[in-house]
Length: 162
Ligand SMILES: [Zn+2]
Ligand SMILES: [Zn+2]
Image (cartoon, rainbow, N blue to C red; front, side, top):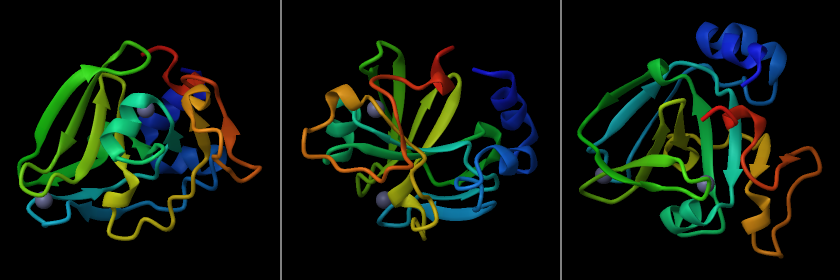
């Protein structure tokens, strides 16, 4: 993880706005699961918004990729109990995936280094424009992406220390 990014994670939204303007437009956003048993408030701009095409995210999302807003873990306030499924992901790291035990909505993916919020769980997902597509070597061949989305064959530099 580069120094700029580490500093951004510590200082929340202000320093991030210069680094990732597209991803930094949302400073506070509420969300939760489909049945509303689990609700959260995210009080920081995302460091990145990812489309992850690893097989683990495909399995979890039920679609071609997982779509996550990466935020500082201490910026999340949660109400309601989640259930956690823990397993190695494609990189071999242990991933903790949290979902609503009642309706099954995917909510969060955690490693010791990051908290990834499932973008579809935000009340308004539309501002969370993807900034990077990762694990592209596992993506279906028909995937189309906007030209300005950064692409990585596996993990991005963001998580290289994980
Ligand atoms: Zn639910
Ligand atoms: Zn993934």
